[in-house]
Image (tube, rainbow, N blue to C red):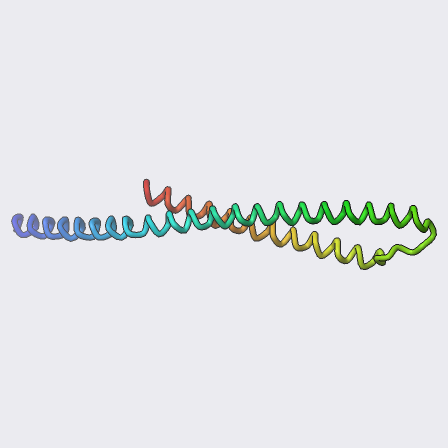
Length: 126
């Protein structure tokens, strides 16, 4: 009976070893995909950061141009109505700030995903 138990334990150990090998192979095959996904996320984040900086530059340039235009209008016709109604200008300002907020939210979501992937990869490597 002892030799039967030993044989059974040996068979269980061999099965466990096979399962471990299979898991190690599966993990090894997943790592390159994770790395590629990670690199893709990094690139996307950089592109989004650049796009955001560009949007902010455009907003600043637009505000600067509007201020200069207002000064010019004021100089030429101190009592005239502004060419762009203030309400319309405020709506445009609001739209731009909402766009920037949405962009920032999307970017922080991507950062969170990236951190999750890095955490999983680190855990898998450990």
